[in-house]
Image (cartoon, rainbow, N blue to C red; front, top):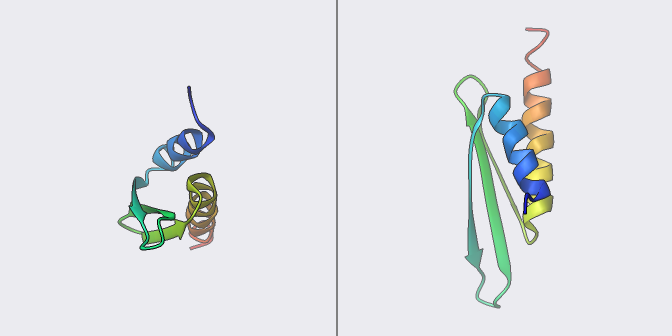
Length: 73
């Protein structure tokens, strides 16, 4: 089943960002999702959240805003 976070990851990739994610477990047993995107001319952006979809949504916003800020330069 295709997940919403995968659709966001596809959008990030189509915008020519490389991306990755990992999951960690805190000492209290909570899951922590860490996602990042990198584009040489725009840098690396890292987001962490207790929810994978929320992390990808935030990364999508950051990469989109970063690309938009480059339009007038």
